[in-house]
Every structure is written in structure tokens, then in C-alpha cells.
Length: 115
Length: 111
Image 1 (cartoon, rainbow over the protein chains, first blue to last red):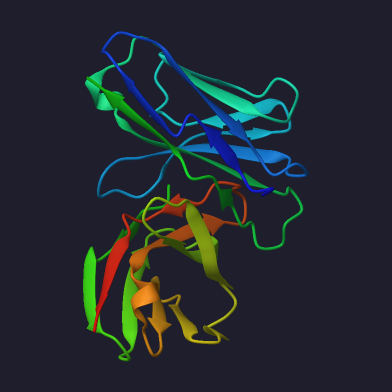
Image 2 (image 1 turned 90 degrees about the vertical axis):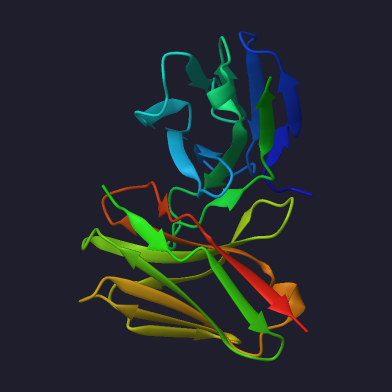
């Protein structure tokens, strides 16, 4: 399968711990997005990369959140000092910069539960 | 920024048509999308429409766009139990690379 891959699929952690999620996009896709989805809500934009450059960050992305895409391929999203309000599904998506439709291809998500 | 609103639930009988509605606020939205999310799976693009179109048909799916009212609808003909899922409306302006999603409409198809 050459779709978007996210790991881990599920993470349960205690409040105050740090967690890191990894996203492997479709190989030729140069754009990579992170969204957060809570129960009953649609995906909320967090941040976006074109190649290795982080071009936009949402106000939702507090100082405890950091995302990287060091070689323009996979990306990591780290949450430091987790809080219960961070519990959500973290979605990664990728796309081609020259896509006519702007379609995003989503991974299955990484579900975070903060106890 | 863009704000996208959808009704939360729709229940239909198998074989009937389903119509899922969406309103958006950004009149400069150039691309409008419908994504489908099945349980435990990521979102998948179902169909899209450009703002210079009023209607797009793709097999059982019909998308209608009313730019004046900023209203988008998705009609699924002959709805099947396999169509049960959450359907997200999303919009993106031509100057942005970031789609904004609605809260999703949960479609339940019963026999």
C-alpha cells in the first residue's frame, strides 16, 4: 500500500508526558498537512509543509506543539507536556503541489488519549 | 477565514436518494469538496466542484452549487447501506492551499 501512513495508530499517555506522531506521505507528494479531529467535529487545520518548509501554522498550534519535516519526506508532530484537552485524532494528509483539484490524501490518523 | 456549516445527521431508507447540504461563508472559495469518512478510516475525496460550475454529476453522485447563496449539496441516488459514513464538505479559495472542513454529516442508511 502506498497511501499515507501514520504511526502509532493509538497512543495513551498520562498528562504531562510528551508524545510524537509520525506521518509518511505518498512518496511523490511535496505538500504535507496536519489536522486535528475531535469527536463530532470536522478536521481542524494545524500546520502545513511544502517540501521541508513549514509554511503556515494555525493559532490552534500552541507552543507545546512542534512539527518538522526535515528532509521533505516524512513528518513528525510532537506534543510536549500533554493536557487532557489534547485528546483527539491527529490526521496527516499529503498532496501534489501541481494538483488541479487540490485533493488531499489522508492517513487513517493517530488517536491520542491523555489520562 | 472560511467557515463551513453542515447538518449533523441524515437517516434514509436503502434505495432512496440522500441529500446532504452545506453552506460556506467565503465567497472567494474556488474549490469545493465532498469527502467521505468510514469508521476507522481516513477521509477520502468523493467529488469536487469548481466555483465556475453549477452542477457536477458522477455516477450516483450529483453536486449542486449555488454561489449566490453559498450553498453546496451532495445528492446520492439509490443510497446503499455501504454509503453509511460521515460526509464532510470542504472549501478552499484559489489563493490558499488549505481546505476548511465542516463538522460532517453522519449518513445512516437503514434497510
